[in-house]
Image 1 (cartoon, rainbow, N blue to C red):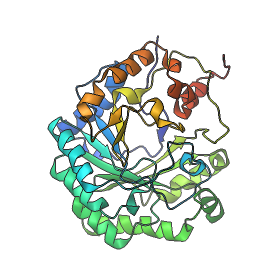
Image 2: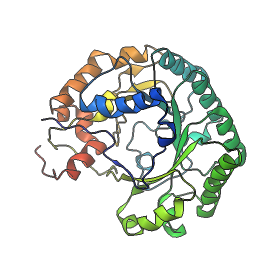
Image 3: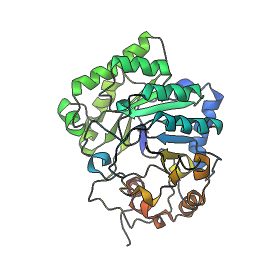
Image 4: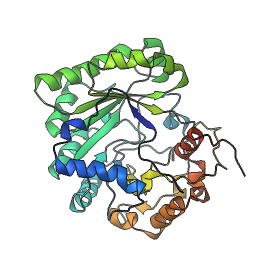
Length: 337
């Protein structure tokens, strides 16, 4: 039987979630129910539950484990999404019942000069869950107040390691003390203002060198975060080739989300570690509708192949570092080419 599991690469370790504060909202509970249950039952709603909206493809760091650094994650053509395009995306999503957006994909969203305006517009259009991932290097006092005023629901801060040496090795270009100061300032400002948002998640990619120190990591960040978590590490350097893995496994992304790049290109998933996005790209939102791409013949075929345990027949999926990671976690390491 084909297996599919949402969030299998994500591990929360503090016994609480950034979602807990909103459990009283029935609409929010329904959104989270769909997130877990629709992939498991291969149920396709009329519109994606979530959109990963790439506010920018530009990053100010060069983390050695990141596919953006190794240039193995789509074309090397970074840019910034225009506000008119963003509003078009949100307008359609709001009309179709879109539940959530993440304003980050390959780049660092706090580099976008209109980030808080994007958050404001999405919240004004009643998107339930608006958030982004950030390295927090540019999380100034002014920006924190702007994001809180905009209504940002949550923020995930990536911080690898617990020592200055490890952190600055993995987050090349960042300053250890400055980022800690930025995170602590965020929590203090939120608390002084008496607000429960944005909910703060501290997370790390679980690189092998960090495992023995992770307990210290959790204890350090617990006073400043609502949730501490880690993500399984993927292998997606220029020499990593994941082709040939076969398993009755389906990717949950295809039933949950789509990605829209800064230039409007629409992807059916996150395409982890895939250098050629054209292998799965569905089109451009400036030339069609999100709903049309979600329900397109190509998107339906992608889901059908995965549901049948034949995801490897899609060249991009055969190369995908997320798929490879999940299959290798289950013990599948032999390849047949």
